Length: 294
Image 1 (tube, rainbow, N blue to C red):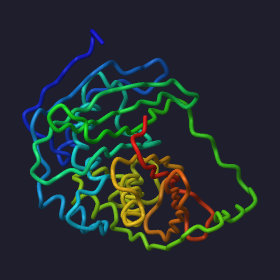
Image 2: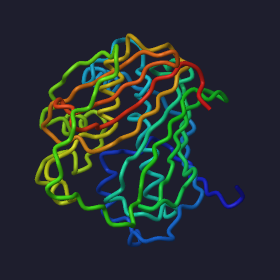
Image 3: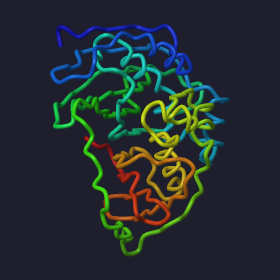
């Protein structure tokens, strides 16, 4: 597009500094009619470093020596953060809701391999609750696209629907026939341990007291933590790249908690879901599919 602005970076931005900068970012109040404008942030040369990757593998239990398919979501996450700090992204960062993620891993990545990163504001859609925005990150080796991810966030302008009091207790979620199921404990410090690996120190994930400042009763797990934990569980069963992963985040996973991950093989890949251990809530639902998604 002719009015697209480009920002060229010399180094990968720091996620640790993102929230300090976000506090001072001047953004208008959330209201109907605000829409993002085209923007691309690029970094022409960088590489995956071994120490942060090792910490990521250890946190989730990914096998060595491969770079996990989801790792670029964390490694290049600060590129999308830089996009959201720009004036072209007109929404306040506090209160954004992460709705969906999808990525394509087209081939394995290597530690130290020269790579180029870009992040951009892609499509937006005005919906009943506000405005959905797609943030796209791409990883290239030379002229070849090797990884592409999209995170969809909601800038809410409508009030949240109130829960009905006195509603009947939920019916336990039925597991699909032939599904594999495994339970995990998700401790209270999950958000802090993820922050040390990802640099994402969003206060809603750290402590109950900081989460309460943003309307949550307790701290909640990061959506990308939940996704990566599921993918680590599926690592040995999933196809080799090229592959695609799609996930929808259904509701926050409050900490601490105990969860049930359910997965099932099908002709088009693997489906997976993360429920509460009591099977009364679903936190996410996703697919791993072989081949290059469109």
